[in-house]
Length: 72
Ligand SMILES: [Zn+2]
Image 1 (cartoon, helix red, strand yellow):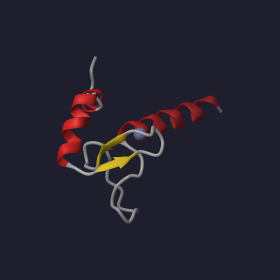
Image 2 (cartoon, rainbow, N blue to C red):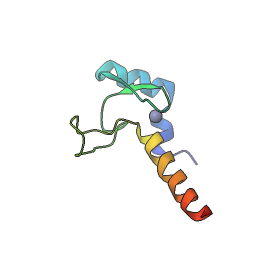
Image 3 (tube, rainbow, N blue to C red):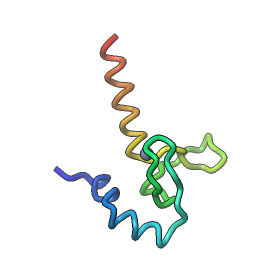
Image 4 (spheres, rainbow, N blue to C red):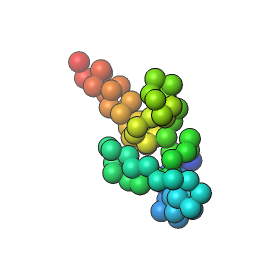
């Protein structure tokens, strides 16, 4: 099954997004992605109001955290 995130990360979708928004590089996966809420989730704790890592990395991180907890 193709999720909404997979569609957003298609090179064509990213290219279109980069025409409309500034690029922001995710430090975790290194991808240049459009700086908008589709790619970077909100984070009120940060000065920018956005997560520094992209949504896919953030969801991957929470999966890893979940698995790590279970392994204990
Ligand atoms: Zn990322």
